[in-house]
Length: 295
View 1 (tube, rainbow, N blue to C red):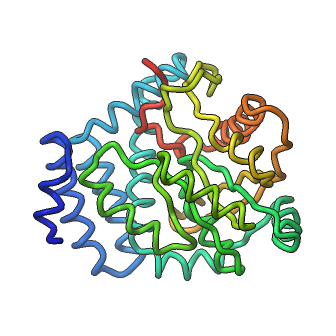
View 2: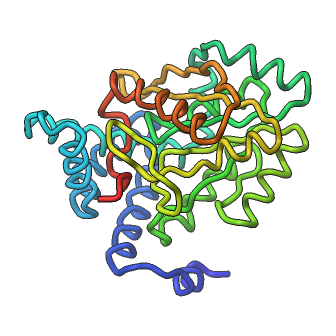
């Protein structure tokens, strides 16, 4: 099927289409550049061009104001710019996954969860890795893939359907099978886990069909899918994070201690607390561009 046919079948706003076309052009242009130049340029382009056009930078500032009302406006603006820069770097890194993967494979991986996942693999026990839109959320998956693990994923399609149509292909090429959220995708994800597989799930997106769980001090609708599936298949639940270093190109990759099984809400609160701890020390690395709270 041709690109034009695909585009015609996708539903989205005119603004979504324009944003996607600009991003496609920037991605195609920057991918021909050397890796370091590519990452720096795309980070700047999203921060300075795409984010203001799409309203991402203003959304980041607004949500920062909600959570940190005492924070000076100048500081919120500075953090929002850095957030958009990190967002851009993450996008082009994931589009550059062969080069990105080689680099991540050389980065240090640490944390108490390493022994736990090795033990689970030896036992044939399924593992669900949970993380948020922080730093580069694909860095830990790539690092563990380089160590010999095969990790699939359950992902939520982006709100910009035009962009999602080609971005999702980058996830398929990184490690194990990737499934879109929904009845069919969840069934495939659960089947993979039942066979002793490993999968990753980002839990920090707004899911209005679910009840609120406090996130950064404010109620936020939070899906309990990660906990529900873990309890259903007796999967080990391991938070992991890729925190971008000051050089903007390398990461500290942490595989944290597993989340104990209890009830779904308690487990989600524990996962949320793990993410909050990372945001507390690196506010500019969480994707404040996402709509997270109800208002």
